[in-house]
Length: 586
Image (cartoon, rainbow, N blue to C red; front, side, top):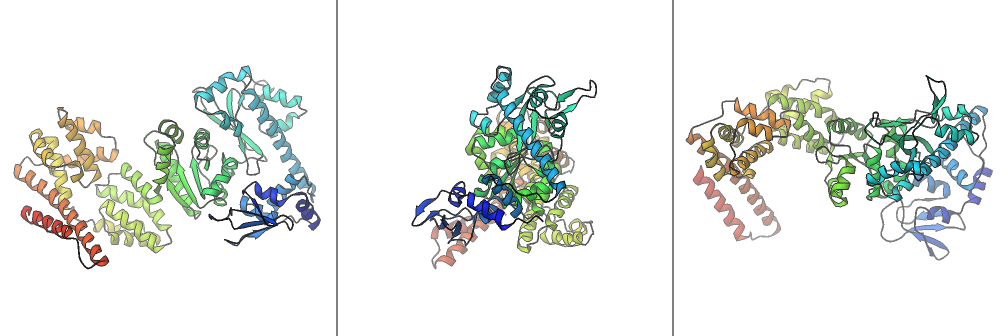
């Protein structure tokens, strides 16, 4: 480990003013001999964070954090001590000693790449505003990027052709070998001539936590493939260890203690433009453990907002486990079908997207939602497949209270017993992957659920029965979400005067789980053309709804009894009325 002498540390301290440094992060106001502000390390409304410029120290009387310029930067930037010294030395203009020739050569090579990348960034950015770059600038404007975001993220344009950047860098006295090492050019295999790595592409500079440009992403202006390419890996760039937008997002991430991970450059840029400045993106790869380790230094909660297409859902499912294992809270922003964050923000606006964030689903809830679309939750086989996919996540839950809460939720939504899930989970932890308890503890299908299936099957078979059923039941009377959707389609077709047929209903279904469920209902011999069975099924559904309402009213009465001696008379009358209606129907 590198150790720095006291002389070096003192020189850095003497060249930097702690008031000016901390003012980059905190709004300070003069207070007596020192300065006061809101603490950046905890939430507070009354300033208790004090900075003493004379003694070059800080202290928060609220949370107890304190120290000097080095400890402040370490805490606020989540850096190691050597990283902090390098950052502050660079800021102070202090040359740090190099103790090994090998290290010296490596540092020099890295600094050279940083310098070439900086020159390339300035070159690409200026290209946007030249006549030859007009089509690229128009493209960005058409994609709704504003001038502030283009400048803040230093977007640029690589001209068509083969040697524009290479020639420009050579004119700046760069060596061809160094241009290749930086990933900015390469030797053509056909002509042997040096050519630019990026050609006729929008350029997205990739910046590390210290604000240095380490690589670039490039996007075509049309539909040519590949749509996106990134710089090759170099001495300063490893795509698995970096994230796009993190440098620009880190301050917002610290303030919100939350990170939004999106799929691509455009999503991040539009998100920042709309004020969601805690958004970042992986660099063309699946989310890695190194990237999550990096994010863990800044926040406790991760929101995943990948595209809602199949690829996006698969990427989300892969990422959830990695984030959870790192000890971070993870939720999923559930986007409308076939959309991405940029689309939603541009079409629906900031308030709509913020509502999606506030209603983001926890890990198990999201996986359960996706798996219920993938497998048929009404079938035994579907339930088994869903449970098998959820067991690795349940196995990672260390809190017994949290585990029981998740198991209860799964049991309710799949119609299983909590006991059977917990028994098989214990077997799973011991290496036994067979779900013997769940297989033997499937509860008998409830009367009201069976009644719902009978009525759906009957309506798809007998048009005369539809009017009778539709006139007596509402969509919300059906308890199974899939049954509700089917009934709603049938009712809408019937009310609009269209012919109701099995195929027409299936054509209007969007969820695969429902498409699988309809044939199952039709082939189970639950269809009845008997009016007595139809009446009995309608009654079963109504009685169940009344039982739910009775239970809710009873709970309200119990709560009132706890709060006060006298229970509201209207509440008691309501309970009696519901009880009477159930008895007369039964």
